[in-house]
Length: 118
Length: 86
Length: 164
Image (cartoon, rainbow over all chains, first blue to last red; front, side):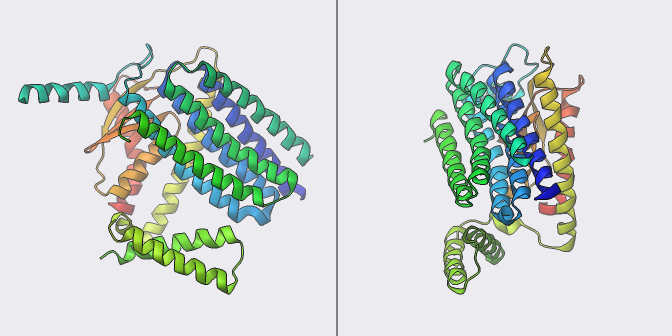
């Protein structure tokens, strides 16, 4: 094991801390979109670091763990994007601190145009 | 030394599970609950790989790959259902 | 011509099969090659997305440059979000902004949208035509148009070379 093992354990600890930050963000953020930001994406780096740390402790497992890291890396943005889209589609309200919502603006203007053309 | 640090990391992940479960229960909307569930499953992938280290068996990594694929498909299906496009 | 896409998918599937099996015995490799050939023919006979991948030395160099920019951005913005979450006043300034993209290929747009989503602080809610709708935790400055463009340009200049 030696130094590589201790380095891996420290990387795992960093990843666990990022997962904790994500959980705190999920609790504290005011609306669903900011919760998606904090919740599903700080966990991406968090779990990737956790996996990398275990991979450094056991170098023989590194290939399988690399496959798992690539899978988390590819699947996580897709699922958070799909959830955000669904939330906007079913009109989950944005928090009162939101500055602007250009998607809703363009959607309402396009529906107005349709009404005019009909 | 390594075992001690990994135990601390596991306690931290367990603490984050508690916090996410609070969000899962209070919710407010359906999407909040699904986001909490997604966060739980992604952290569980890391936790299963840590269990693989503690038990010293490589098969747990395969378990976590299958778990990750199933939870990913589950979240996609729930979001499609919420968009009423399923 | 879809032959390039079939070859790329075949080798990716074969690599995943071999890593999961953990051995390189002859029967395992043969079964994996047969299954990957079958799956790549079935999956890519109708789909042309993988043909947009460019394979050249310049593309390889730009892939590594892109990965470097992307990973540094990922770490930096993760620390930024952690700082915002932990500070007691919760300094956020959220909003949804729109940004035009110059990328034409579907593969390039997919990677651009996923890169924006993976860097915390910004995530793609919807893509309509050429326009990306991006939710930001903290909009900096008064000029939202300029801020939105800066998010997209960061990755776009590498992806333009890779996928056009």
